[in-house]
Image 1 (cartoon, rainbow, N blue to C red):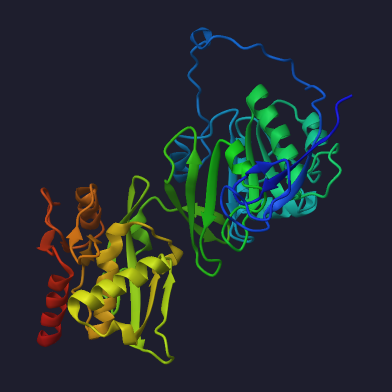
Image 2: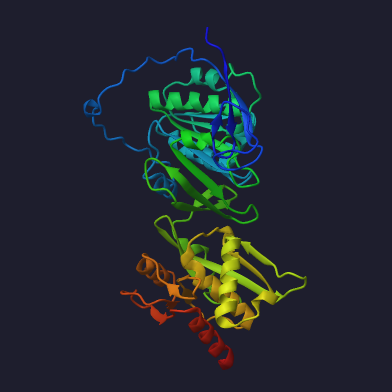
Length: 446
């Protein structure tokens, strides 16, 4: 009789080792090794399939299932693929369960949908569904998070939602829910059902304080699609971002607005901008590209005298390392005493940007606050700044110009482009010194 096999799994990267380790040899993190007992395989409830040559596999065109949200369908690659497993993670209270309930209600008109929750009772789920106007005849609720037991009660499911990953468990695994063993065994059971029966499955997971989905990293390797739900709870804007997608491009984002009756998709990205494209000193506008979608953004900066020994660099929605480098570039090439100033920057609306082409708008906001002069109204700044102070255009510069023009901007500051947008005035900036001269001239005129 086969015995149990013991391994240790790194929670950060999924590295496996037969022995305990203090520091992970793969990712270098400390104290991430978790004990995992592997049960010997006892067979499957499904028939075993023999390997077949790839040329003999029949060609099938899988029809995707619309979710009822155009934005969600877009980041999924055109809709839900039958037999796929989608993991959606986010902070508690961000709106994951709300979105899943709305998607479940939409798909319940096409077939049987099962919503399995280990966090709420059936009465609580019905109360939330009533508030979201999601009461449907073919929507079934189950408060039992035991995967192998609840799956036996499914009858021709079109979609199954497990909320949440940390409460799922398998009856044959003798550990607490949320442990490495339970999470791994539960996901494997779910994957088996999805692939053999062609059932689409959503897994809801919470994130840690570091922003990673709680549980072993190997879960993200197993599933087909990984989506992160981002946003500030005090803000209405919500962002869905794909970080892995086997059926479409990754890195795509979808914008939603949280309302009293649930999530409402934002199909026009310029809707998050203020009605007046002008502001006080320290306000600048730019265009970021998330995946393949350009989005106009508003960046605010505050430069003040240092109150303590070392100057502070605080960034919200921007990489702090990028802010530190950019402030050093401005101080070096414009001869500004930024090393004696505190700099605070933030992206309005709760967005998080990593696009380097927003460097020029970030620099414009910082210099606007430093010189205490507002930028010209309806002006967008587009360009990447190098360590030499040079401003470079991205490959999607023309696409950004078109989006800026359609969003109401009349002029764009940035590097020279081969083709511009109709109705947009291009002000060429090839170096941060030219940006400094433009702002100082505005200050003299004011």
